[in-house]
Length: 391
Image 1 (cartoon, rainbow, N blue to C red):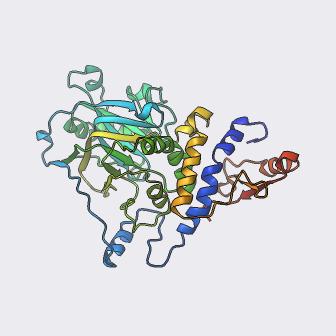
Image 2: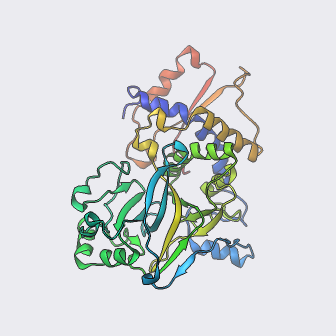
Image 3: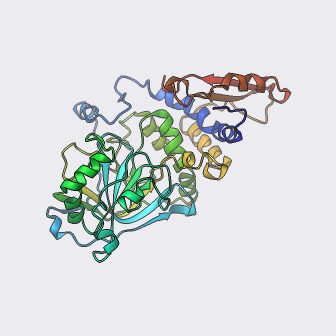
């Protein structure tokens, strides 16, 4: 990939200076906290149990669902959405939907969308309950590559749509012999399929919730999740009003707890992305038959800027980045090392070539930096490369 010829990449570098500088200085120290803190980059439940044995309490949520232990007694649901939150892309609201999660990907959710029983276009479609295969990189109303095969909308990158007239209809449909074969033929391996796959009970949440499901990889967490939600965080902060009371946590248990030092959870807590919401753990157990459903659910479109090829209008504005940076430095009581009013202090820019992955590497990174250093206007700039953010 040539950076010199790609102006969009240059735009990305300019816009993410705030994130890279702040996170490099903050997230790495968080990975080396004292021995009594949780040092983990995953949602291993054993780590949570370890905290409990040490006497550190994980506060239970006061948000309690309506529980249906018989799927035949569940009132009919009729779904609505997605509706853009804050009139901005990247975060969408649904009503009366249920969520499943991939057994092999903590960031991939399956959304069950309910239609009226007399919607013959859906009910007469035997594949209505089958999710499109990995990986979707398009919007909700865009045509996915498997849409013609399954005859329904696929959803978007981290939220794969399935359709049904009721919970019982979905459970029966997904477990039909022909659909199990279709599931397999589409490339869904058993360890990737959505959990639960059959339903014996439903937990229905009436409080507005936001889904927290993100990839633990540092690059995906920052570029796919953080860049998507930052504009909405800024709007909620400005309005001093967060539209959700609960956080449906599908990636890591106790992400909102101060006892959990998983670096990305600490970052999200520090900037106050959750407002005053309470966490509801929904990390699925392997053989669960409980389905979680929501009267009102907000869910981010992960990797929205990447889907839009990092076009400027898909990225957080400089105003948002400045506030993000200010909050981080203030919360962590870090000395400001950049003051653009003082010429004696250099501007620092970090470049990342993605080399450790061995794929999608920016091949002419060193040439780009060398050329930039030769320009007079960059004399007071400190240009450096970062080999591996995960180090």
